Length: 389
Image (cartoon, rainbow, N blue to C red; front, side, top):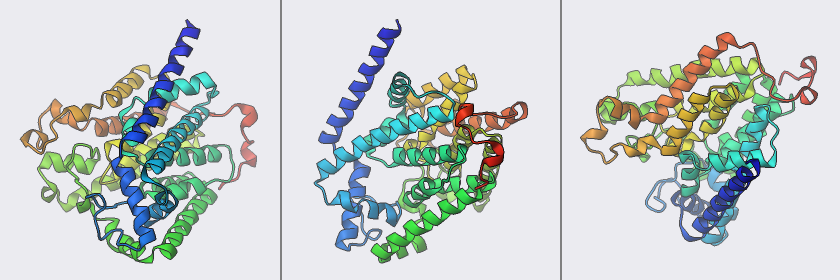
């Protein structure tokens, strides 16, 4: 039975991998295309944020466009295939790191099963479908957090991730409030250094971005059902951006404070998997725009629930993101998408509801848990020898 299961896992993984390769060669993923055009815009001296690329605005940082300059020098199809293969590798590495943080030995069979099952989740395959950067950010942050959990120097991965896309900057705050000051300073310095590099290479784009663009949500469709943030839900429920008053600014602030407090307590108890899952979820609640494909943090969150023995919650969360419930609700801008409609509204904001439920669950669970050791004892540094930073 075990042999048959192992073969089935490998077959599923092989089919998924072949599907990614064929898809990458045949389909022009929209977000990757915009990244590629962004790299070209930097090389050509074009207005990165003043002109639409493929009909849409470039909304990522100038550093993101700078990192795409080498890939923009390649033919689009070759660049896309390379990017998608690297995305698969990044996700596999993120799964390996998650298993290690959970205290599990990442055997080939276990990693293959986790990757195969993980690729069925909508945020994961949607990231690949669009050619998004989310899987790289997930891998960078998890790798850095594991180094922190082992008492090793860390912070560069988180700093680079934050320089590419601002939302991972919340992990710098986690390191700070968890007492890992040295790692937090390293991450912040890396973020600044990456921004400085982008400023040298693309000064005009950097000026426009940091003075105007990075806080401008009008360039994206906030009410769209894919936006599973509290702000997106409020806009849909209240009937438009113009109906959400200044009072709403207190919501992300409160979510950030509460979420980071819970994450810091888990980190100080030595459970960095819980800390990273809570922080990743908190980042999605703080951001005004959290597209469905941003919810890749469901992977460490499900790992936490499964490790803790919450099998029903794990299965329910997996099915929610497997079936991509919000996408089955009205999303054409009609009256059924706006306002309150009972369970339909709950389903339409399913990822958001799941994220809030996860944070509440992790906060409540703090009362009955004294700590967690993610690595085998021989891999752990003695407590007295672990650096504060």
